[in-house]
Length: 127
Length: 394
Image 1 (spheres, rainbow over the protein chains, first blue to last red):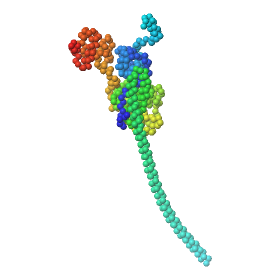
Image 2 (cartoon, rainbow over the protein chains, first blue to last red; image 1 turned 120 degrees about the vertical axis):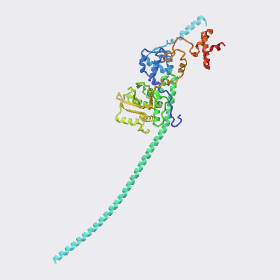
Image 3 (cartoon, rainbow over the protein chains, first blue to last red; image 1 turned 180 degrees about the horizontal axis):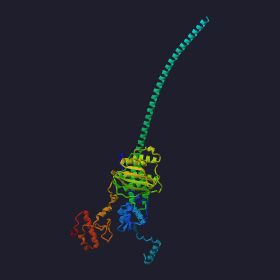
Image 4 (cartoon, rainbow over the protein chains, first blue to last red; image 1 turned 30 degrees about the vertical axis):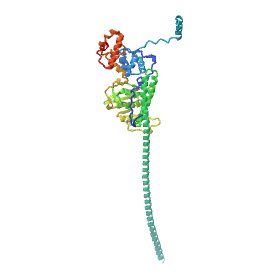
């Protein structure tokens, strides 16, 4: 692997590992911050944003002007979606952001009921 | 007659006495001569034995020093051999760890939205600790430390070091500073700080905080690490100072079964890269205050642009291209508003006014898409876009 006896290795990985950025916080469940969940900075977020880590501060700065989706935040910060979710969870816990979750998907329909309806329709109109 | 006999008697007695005295004197003289002779003999013998002894002693000394020299040489040779073997292995480990870190980073970005990310983060943490150990062994064996080719803020360097120890969440960096370390200093300072943090973490309670602050003193930039652990006694302190100065480098064989090469490693790299580390201070929690003193050759006042760190540039490019077309917030984000042309269309920043008549002929939507198509082909061919109508009419 090394070319010569004293070949100096070049370190190309990002300097600050992602788990330090999140400070070891666990990933929130997926449905907490979906791609389309909208987030916006709270009224007084800018003042306390200075004490945040640079990445969390960047997220707050991004959403200061208005609602932005989680996917967009991830795109602009160049951070993986999961990392953005962890940061958002932290920010929401500190009451620094407002989160507007999308309308939840309809509950999975009862299969039996649907087949009964289909059966009824078939009987009535012929199939 | 009687008197005569008495005189003769006395003469005889005197004669006998004189003879005895003479005989005794002669004997005495002989004895003295003999004694002197034997004394001289003995002295001579003593002298020879003395010189023999001296010779033997010198020889013994010579042998002993020769033996010591040979032993020392053998030890040094063994040390060198061990180092050479370990150096190869450590370099190999080091490059593997670095490769794995890069790979893991890629995987983390690839599966960033997946639940597997949390496991990946843990794997990365374990890997970062392994990489630090490999770096430490490499330094002890005289192998080069890996290098970074980009300057970084001292804050990020400390965070990088933070990631290399087990209980990293105990570390809090109290200030953010824009002062940047030069590229050549990034890797060695990160390793030194990581070893100090590891030391602070292992000599204090499980949940005790470790605080990192920055301070500028004259031309030096200081990274100050305060722990709340047990302090050091004078002996420890003296030993630590010796090791950290890089003057005393313990042999690999002296490091013991559970090698502690934190301080020797710091000493070696500090000497190599020209910074100083001091652990004799007392922190405000009564633990150890470690200070990394960076001379001005290693850092600059310039800020490092944080945006450059991001590896992805496609989003930036897209932003730049449509900069003049759409309304933007103060932060450069596209503003949401009334629905405009399809997002995927080629932005028509230059040629919007001349194409407005076209939609009247073909209807709004088809005209728009045709216009977009044309703008696309034109911008693709890099032609002047001021006369799209001409070609359409022809």
